[in-house]
Length: 124
Image (cartoon, rainbow, N blue to C red; front, side):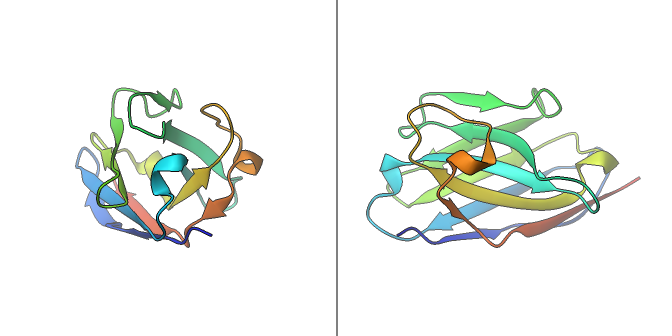
């Protein structure tokens, strides 16, 4: 069992930056790929990016590539989402999720555990 808690959301102006954190419980954190998803009002949950178990590989959605960066600290059971050059269309609830799937997946059903989400609002 893995419990995930996101933090760091808030209100930011367009062009600004935020860093989200996701704290995981349990001793098996390093055995999971960690992903970030987001969901805007009235829209389906959307893949943002994922980082491999040891942090060697990352994969991002085209909409955030070059602006967002995922990193992790397995010693502290933390994963981060650094968001730069934010746009109003980045406004959403952001979720972290843990996956035991074999590869880096952008598909939500391949994730086993989810956090409760943190709100990010980007004003124009």
